[in-house]
Image 1: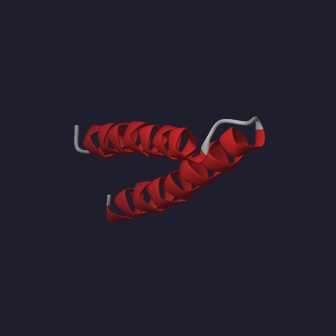
Image 2: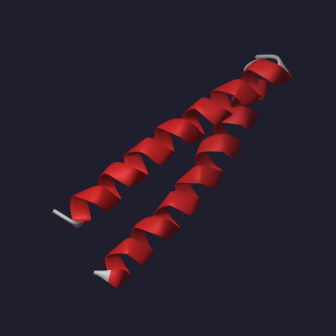
Length: 61
């Protein structure tokens, strides 16, 4: 059980970094201004947090 929670935590950190940076830099690449690109990155982070907590809670059921 502890290994699964640790695995989900590491997965969360990895997806957290990828979600923000990939969204941010791709948004800048296609011409979205910096402030909107940051906002999109933070939205992706929030969606990732929600999905991670759902997966961790599912481990306890």
